[in-house]
Image (cartoon, rainbow, N blue to C red; front, top):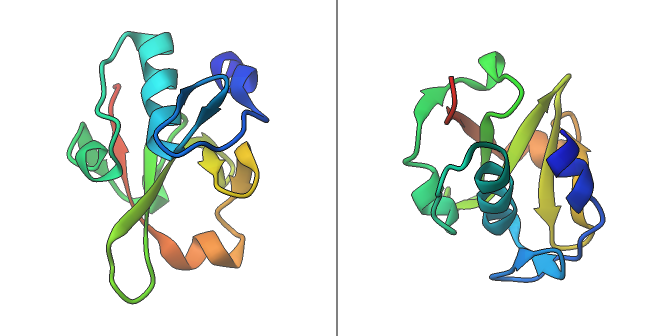
Length: 118
């Protein structure tokens, strides 16, 4: 959580992966590199193939949570589950922030989880 806290408020920057700006997959890549030494791809679609699948009802701290666009069903966003229905992510409007899966926008688009570390 300390690594995530260090980046809260970092502005959104498409393709970014540092404290000057980052996008959602860049945020995930940086946090997992820092915390566990994992080298992950900087791509939502490629991240969706990492680790093991986990249902939304069984998410644990540190699991990745993926979101699909309405209509097309294409993956467009990823965050890190924190527990109690909250997740950290890089939002285009708010930069790195914490949001709730109970917010209608995220609730409708939440697709699945992936567990990278056991």
